[in-house]
Image 1 (cartoon, rainbow, N blue to C red):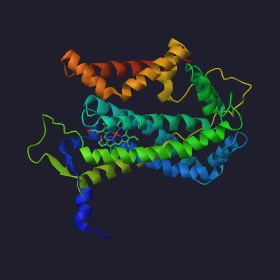
Image 2: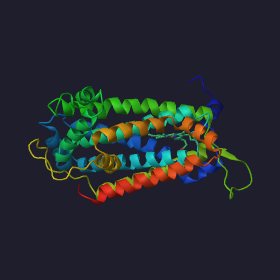
Image 3: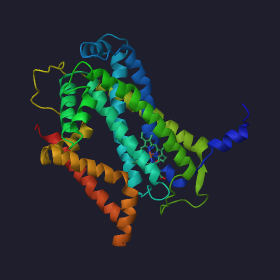
Image 4: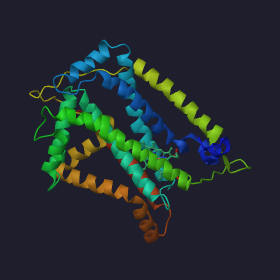
Length: 337
Ligand code: HEM
């Protein structure tokens, strides 16, 4: 390798600002770590999983009941998915409330938004692969929601379900999205995200109780060990969750029986409640509008600061948004319909 040890150290030894010693401020490493766990456990599950409506449910039952440690790796996959969504949301909140999306990091914020959508897409498609009642009806409801998009509804629904209704081709389509298209897109997005972080460095923040002395510390070994300890702790937490609360299975999908209560995963509760409150067409259009606004938030923030003359306006909007999201999520969790 035409690379000396000194050159390698210089390449990896990014000076890290002191505020990254606070765990909340280096949360980006957590979804990256969990994504690797998902790839490894996902590959193990794919060895036994059979993606067709005739075989999917039985193959997952086989993984859970017969395959050595199948229940464990399936449960790890499920819990790592939950923690990944949670950590992506917390990381995005940290970036938002510290205004770390401002110039020159606008594009990286947009890459982050794509990562958020891919993470949610992985959650949705993964839920559908089990082919239990809620997988089937969740996918059917998802298709019906897409159908309400004015002008594009029909093609969007057909693209998702591979037809007008759930059919033999639907599950293989979800599998390709879940196991190939979305992870490959995510790998590319994470690479660009990290590359841009290396180019810009992270936004430097100051705290009142900062110790005097140098403003930065070395990535290797200081920050590397922080991330390593975080990864090992996560592995213990994941392992404990998988053992104490292993992934279960609901009844097999039956197109003829609509369940009394259809619920998506917890991270879609907010959208589900929104749909129930405002009806499909308005809810879909308003959610589309909100997602577009989130994409271009760095510029909206700049405009708001200019118009209002205050720096904190985004913080107030963020606090209201977080409270609304929590309220709608708790509401949806608390009621059956
Ligand atoms: C799989 C998902 C993601 C991964 C693996 C990831 C990874 C990272 C890492 C390792 C950092 C370095 C600083 C830190 O740890 O906070 C970072 C910073 C950043 N991330 Fe993410 N991220 C993800 C999702 C997102 C999302 C959803 C957004 C926002 C929409 C976002 C926007 C940013 C921005 C703007 C920075 C720069 C922050 C600064 O300069 O302080 N990221 N990300």
